Image 1: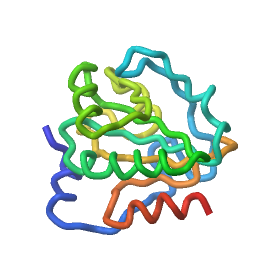
Image 2: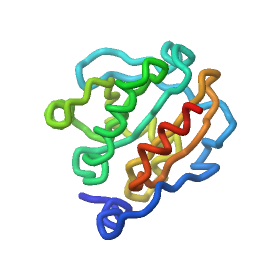
Image 3: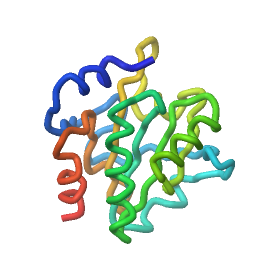
Length: 167
């Protein structure tokens, strides 16, 4: 099932859009910590990874989301090209096998946390009870753990937005 935002994105290319607040998460505030098992079966702790680099990219996706297929490789290349950037993807999926295949197809090496019950997504305001998920959603977090930017629509200028986050 494709979310309405995914379908709208496919209809027309738009610039990247950001918001100051998404549910309980606000720009300038501390990003809520989380942890969970990855598609590879390892435990991932946000707390243990924040502060290691200048910028942390946290991005939500699903294998059925067409804009995610376009922008995850952009993020992956950005993360790999900058040693001062760390990243984690959060999959809104029930099973790891399709996520592993998806990651192989897109050549993703960044950890992918499985959010099978959407508890992390609800905590980050990505999912609101009773509504279909509107993804992709990306959070840029500084070294101190504060939200620098909340991206709600990854447009044609997405790569530029990522690069500018390092300035």
